[in-house]
Length: 96
Image 1 (cartoon, rainbow, N blue to C red):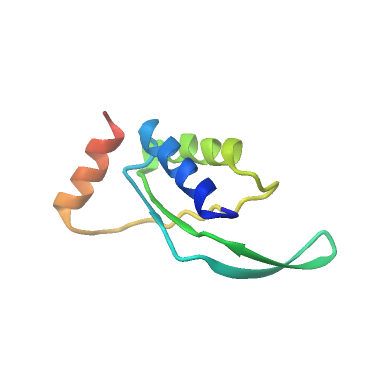
Image 2: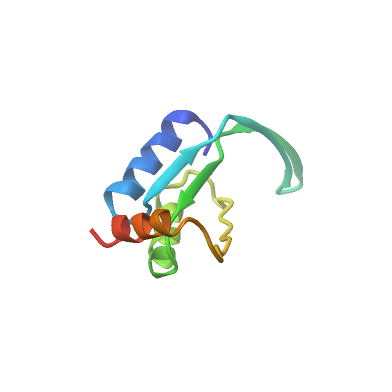
């Protein structure tokens, strides 16, 4: 997200819609990338969003709808394991 305020707003939206169990706002970082023929230098707030496969498509759609970027960075990483109680908590939050 472009700033902390928009990151918090998106995080709260995803949590309130039961699309994410937890969202971590990471420290602002500098991103440098090519976009539409120019090199861009921007400050961004990365988010780690915890969801499950069942909610992923709805989560992705909600991010695209709310995100101010034309092409937000959305990457899915499959979790093959973890603390069972934590994973149970994630699934319980998503089914409320």
